Image (cartoon, rainbow over all chains, first blue to last red; front, side, top):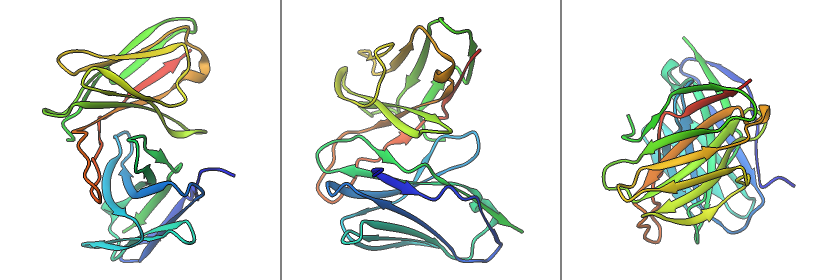
Length: 111
Length: 117
């Protein structure tokens, strides 16, 4: 079983749609759950992080963590063409600083 | 702009050669991380340095080595290059001072694209 599973897409949606991105994981030691956004030919940038279970909202973005199901989600409301990018889920254990990434989902928001 | 700089942006070389990738962390950051991104493996952690000392290793090949210098910049050395080493190599930096419930954000540089022919 892979440590992290993420559907690579591609995902194509019209502008204004609600986007749902998901990852599953198998390592119970993960305590920090993150979403990175990577534009083409750029480095990843941290969008949101959640410590432990629950929801976190930041503008149009909502991150959800369900530790019992080992499932995390990122929702994007009112999606914009500028949201077109690859979205990577990432995980950290409490004891170290090594990020474990999903392979990323390529999202295209069409005007 | 994350504040992390990487040079060169692109590197084209031949199999069997050796290259050095350079990274300058954000001002004030003591930790440097190296990652490799390829189409089949995704983004993979290679190695972590904190204030000049190696702190953690990932799936880094023996042909690869890294160091962090007193001025905190870091270099990743790749030797006996193979076709499969072609990838994007990212450096990230962080302060390395995590408190419970808050994460030590890793800021990524723009990457070096390595092509081995």
